[in-house]
Length: 345
Length: 265
Ligand SMILES: Nc1ncnc2c1ncn2[C@@H]1O[C@H](COP(=O)(O)OP(=O)(O)OP(=O)(O)O)[C@@H](O)[C@H]1O
Ligand SMILES: [Mg+2]
Image (cartoon, rainbow over all chains, first blue to last red; front, side, top):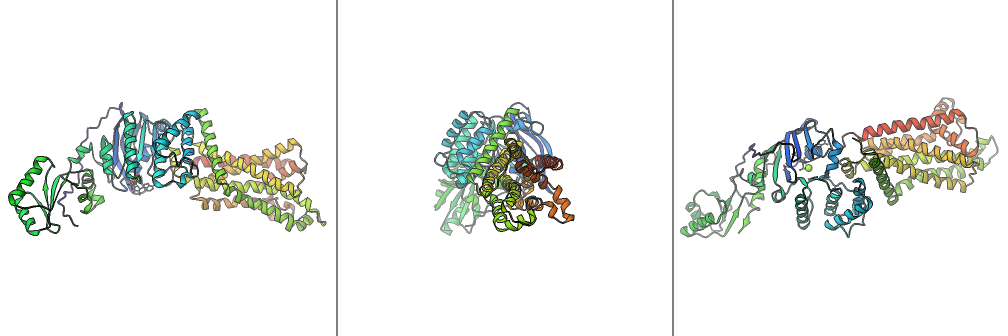
């Protein structure tokens, strides 16, 4: 199936920024972060401002520098240049205060495989200086929430990928951090665990926690994030709410598929503003997906006396935004990726 | 930037518990390393025993005299072997993902290393009890007073502490377990080039100087003196303690500097 698309690869640097720069109220405030590994400039001056109690999502293709940004903001690696304050503390001068305020779940598993899941949790409780009793209570509670009770007494090295991931995140929550960094938290989780995770993140946020999230699942950002930034080529190429970002790309359309070439031709001449795909016998008509526009399309078809074999409505989603904004590096050609996103009605 | 002292102490204990838990769950590393001194002890006593004691006593073979000579050396070899285990487990631990987590937590950084060191010293002392037990079973008859026993235990703990800190540094510069075991090998070779198996007097002149003053010989001579009442000599006692202090300091600062570097990966 080759869907010829008239996707405009707008190499956008448009930003819909409404960032607050006043220090109070910002859980994360970073300016001018630079990081290079050898000759490779990974971060080339990025600013990030995350209000307390919100979810901020960093998107970007593989190798864009998302993990590097998380590593810098979580005191794991030093930046080459730039400043950041986390929970009001300077990242470099007050690193230990920063660490006391944050919880980090990195991209790569950070559990102790030699000991059991429960022992991992108790280890975190001790390192967070909780009392024995409190530590046991928190451990039992989190193991329950993350569906790890049955596996609690087994060595973590015997866990499945998804179980390890859940343990990883549970360990991050032991100390009740006010700011949480989650680097691709749901990668490798099955749909049910993913939704559980989203639910937990929402609960945390409603309790006032700030979440800094990177993800490859754009739906996740769409679902959770108050603000989204797209990182590409070492810079933030767009930032805004999911809605704001979706407005950056054209994308909404109705797609008609025909099996009869004659009907296809007739429809193509009857309808205006269509994009043709002669091989697949499909037509795309720009549309915002509203009932009114849909009815208009149907009326045209009726008037022309043709019947489409299939009609589907495509609303722009973050995938479109992602492809459009990061086209230079990601270059996903025009694959079935967008076509499969369509919501058949 | 350091946590309150009570937190640091608790972190050390937590990390110690973690390392002892590892050792208890996976004792094979330490046990494998223990095999070498035990086998050498049996080999030298039962296979080469007569020749060795003939050399020692100038003619007549008396195996028990060689047992007495050998066991203190084997005890120090045990300390060296178990420190190799520390290097390996530190190197392995550094490749574990949980290290990144520790580095983003508000804990005493040194606790990660101190947990390894204290855990290793405890394991070494346990290993020494085992080896000493075998020694006693095959005829080792020390005549030490309780105070001398205490001093002997203290000396072995000191040597263990010194070698363990060096081993931690070796573990930190090694990319993986194999690397650590390779880089640590010269350290474990030292006891073989000491007065552990034969007196330095019996060695060729050009070599004697090295054998006499390298860290193990003074420690072994001091241990012999404490356990068997042989002449220690002030030089040996002072040298032993000085070597331990020096190696501990070097190992400690080296390890600390390595550990605070930007993580690999
Ligand atoms: N320790 C390092 N040494 C050398 N290069 C590094 C190091 N860490 C990251 N890089 C490089 O920096 C770039 C960004 O890496 P990073 O892991 O931040 O990307 P990412 O956006 O998280 O990618 P992914 O989506 O694959 O997780 C990559 O080109 C990577 O090779
Ligand atoms: Mg990454």
